[in-house]
Image 1 (cartoon, rainbow, N blue to C red):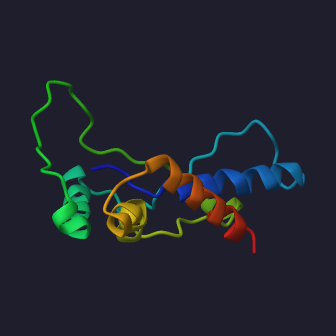
Image 2: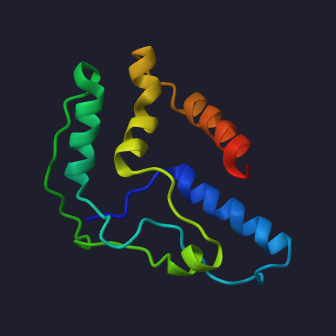
Length: 130
């Protein structure tokens, strides 16, 4: 299982942290994690299934192969400090994150990853601190 989250949720955490440090509300030089709550980690195959479901006929033929690389079976981040001190939490559910990440591919029947994420970051920044 992995702690999946939208990159904009993590980015929002760091932007909020920078604001708090700049305002003197939290000290510099501390460690911070921005990740989903415990119990929200899911398998890679679950994310693939969500992507396939959302993409429909646009979905590539995903192939899951066994890897010789040994990995931890469960990964997580301890984000309670960010939750309590910065009042931070993910805004996107897993389903919303997958949908948002793939929305341009569905809308345009093609994929411009760089253009899509730059556009989403600009929109996110405009709405982040309202």
